[in-house]
Length: 169
Image 1 (spheres, rainbow, N blue to C red):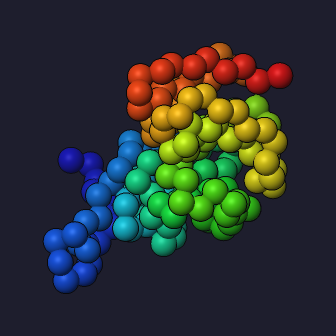
Image 2: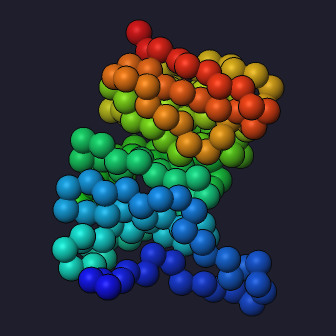
Image 3: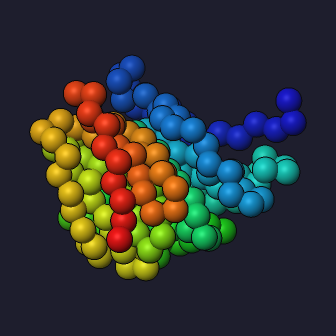
């Protein structure tokens, strides 16, 4: 083993309260590795030394993504954050999707895409988190990971098994 880093520490009095699971794959972007935990934190870890360079109290059960010096995270409560990659400072926060059980964010082009429990795919402006578009797939939750499809497209899968290819114009 080269190094080990802790992202979340279990806390609470019951088994349920102490759940602090890493809920998605870590994201490697340049010299840093990003990881997020449910009922825990998001952290940036130096990939050469394993030292945590910054961490924030942001809980997620779907995951994170990073691109162009920003880290995007879907908070467990429904807010979306764009964080500065080397310090964790908030660029913007979009709080209008509270309780929508959002997928992991997918940055692509000038937008960040994410799905929700009602079958919508939301597109937010990368610069300020403002809504750019919204598309309804079906009346079934979007699965937690969206897949990039070329340079201006994405694939979305719903819980009922639907697969949708969406193109950005």
